[in-house]
Image (tube, rainbow, N blue to C red; front, side, top):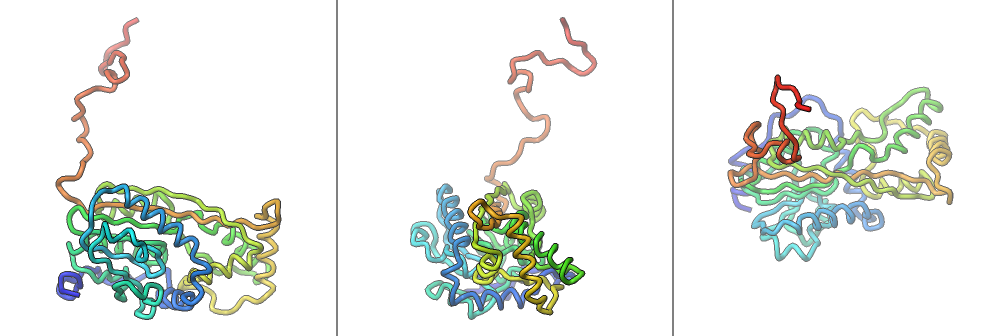
Length: 315
């Protein structure tokens, strides 16, 4: 890979932050452990990746150099890319995670210290990986800086409604059984926060929308098994490292069953997927009109009479 791709000559990352929410070593470890059986649990990644591809297909352009963030994404395997993308790279936290996409051009890297030079990429895609980044605003800034003018960032990430049922049941069970609460489900950004982050990071024409998927399971234990199989366990830095015991999980499953069971007895779990897109600024892009620059007044558009300040309406 040439120097234009790597950032050894053009550091693109800000200073290390002092406060962290997630244990990034734990995040990487969970992804490694999930690799061998991931195909049994990858339905959310397959769905989100398909949505990203469909959205990108509406944009009629080609991308000479692109990066997919996250080896668990199905995007590197999409044969349709050969008509749209020239060089496609995949990045994840560890070299061993290449096993998710053995045929792709792969490099180990961290979104928090983005290893691509400024103005070096035409497209950056991310599929359900950014929710466990500690400095999400900083990561989005670095991604934007890596894009060439008029380059595109398009991503999917878990949103605020994700696993709200599981979070509530675990908290209630822990308060009963252990007389205290430890965070066990990651915090997720909501749609408004994601939009604000894109604007703060300097993207042009930012867009955020969301879909909520409701998945049913035989029990809360089956749901938690699915999360482990996805590589989406608890990686909160201040998590309780002591196993809480069988009584805790049994009580949480009981609460879940009583509160969120469907008529057929299966429990439901919500997954909100946020879809984000934004462009690296370029002079050719559409810009909002300046206040007062409209050539047609609202009164004309509505076929009504305009009353200026200080005037009274005529009968």
